[in-house]
Amino acid sequence: STSYFDPDMPVAADVGVEVNASYTIAPGLILSGAIRKKLVGNQGKSGRLSDSKIRHVRSDANFYSQQGDPAITDLTLAYFFRPGKDLYGRVTAGYLEQMYGGISAEVLWKPVDSRFALGAELNYVRQRDFNQLLGFQPYGVATGHISGYWDMGNGFHGQLDVGRYLAGDLGATLSIDREFRNGWRVGAYATFTTVSFSDFGEGSFDKGLRFTIPLNHFVGQPTAKTYSATLQPLTRDGGARLKVKDRLYETVRGYDEPNLR
Image (cartoon, rainbow, N blue to C red; front, side, top):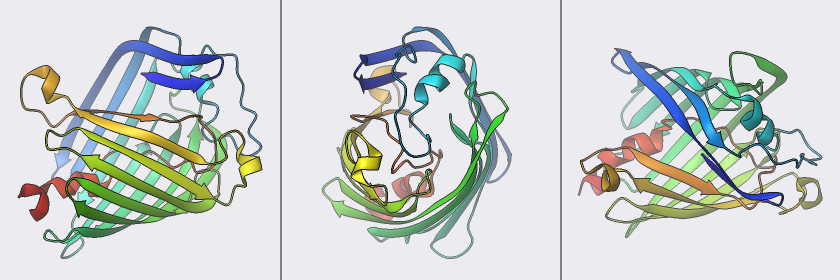
């Protein structure tokens, strides 16, 4: 696990072990979870505290790194279903990510022969305790987005998300990614919300680079598993979106007509 660009500790990394498991209770109904234990590293050892003027929804990451050892990184029950023609649905409940738990519901319209897709997501979550076990902090928030997806061809993919973020701010995120034939993927995003540049703090608005590496290059056999990372100049609280695994567009798009071709 890595983090970058903290002025007191520009590069931080932890090495450890993670045990994860999943069980398909019935078609589309999946119970899954993961527990992580740090063995060695320096994440969370920076003495820099957040100076954010808005709710600390992401900028207290140091406390999660310090106290979450061991940590339940996620523990969820998810249900995937087909509500109609060209429609996909998902409902996920539990400890959704490192910092938040609650319930997330999503619906996606994606014809198999179309380069366009539309989705909507609604979540209600509470902030987890810093030790990332079973407890919660008092802060709860409803978030959600309407999303548009466009396969532009030649490996380029665009996405626009409009909605409400974890700090209660309203705005939009624009993302562009380039996916190569060997499965490697690089992209960039920028988010602008109702949080002013001055209240957002250093960096003015949320932006970053992200990349995905297919692991079959390293394990020597076919696998759908990947390693993904996002490089942000700073972790701030404006424009922060909930992290939910198995969002529908990335789950289903590999099986549609343009991608299969």
